[in-house]
Length: 102
Image (tube, rainbow, N blue to C red; front, side):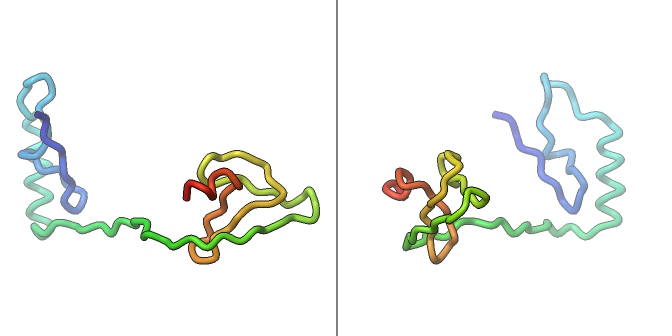
């Protein structure tokens, strides 16, 4: 099973780099990592990942009175539509068929 490489403040730690075709880790990678560990604290950078929150969708139809404004469905990418259903909470825009599955 291959190990995943992690990044600590932009420096790759050599102990966490996967072995490729069972070859040892190059010596210059150790030097880069040692330089990085001296310059920067040994704390891991925690990235905030945006995750979708469950939404109790409340769809309302939006209609276009002209052909200039048209929408694409956010799920199936169908379109252009002159009328689309938009959630009043999360602003998700879906076609009629996709509102049934959301």
